[in-house]
Image 1: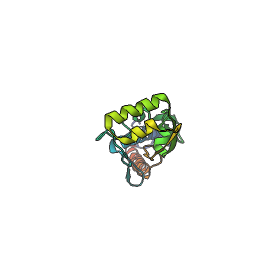
Image 2 (image 1 turned 60 degrees about the horizontal axis):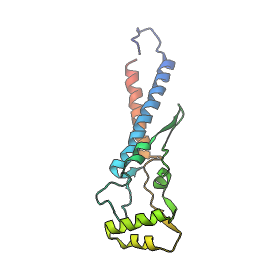
Image 3 (image 1 turned 45 degrees about the horizontal axis):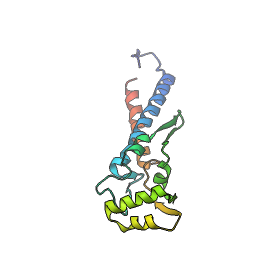
Image 4 (image 1 turned 135 degrees about the vertical axis):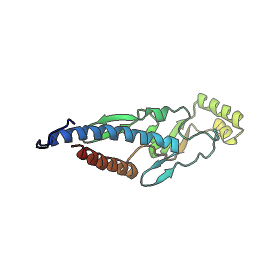
Length: 174
């Protein structure tokens, strides 16, 4: 804001518009980084940190959960933003099942059975052998909830603190 003389009335409307614009921008970037950090921390922070459940049969020992190719993490983006709300999301087809958990049904095709044989020979884990020779046409797989995006009390508190400090700093400069 431009410097004003002692008798001049501050432009509070302009002050509010500028602050509102900056709050939306800051909140969008901060929240997106907060959600992306979930992949680094291997868990989600709502009011407290909740680590993701470990893999039952780890085919990538030491590998981070949900980060094999980083496609899911890199797919997070701001879907819509206005002065009233910011919508975050992902276009990844498997984002929702990982974020919320649930069950999926996998059709046992020839290609799937070939993959299970490959995994059996690579890991010597008998579960893959049984999936390859199964008489079933479908497998039901339970995906645990590994939330990486959503409402967070911690994030909202951080944004609120920033907002209060920003108002104080800007009023000092008027």
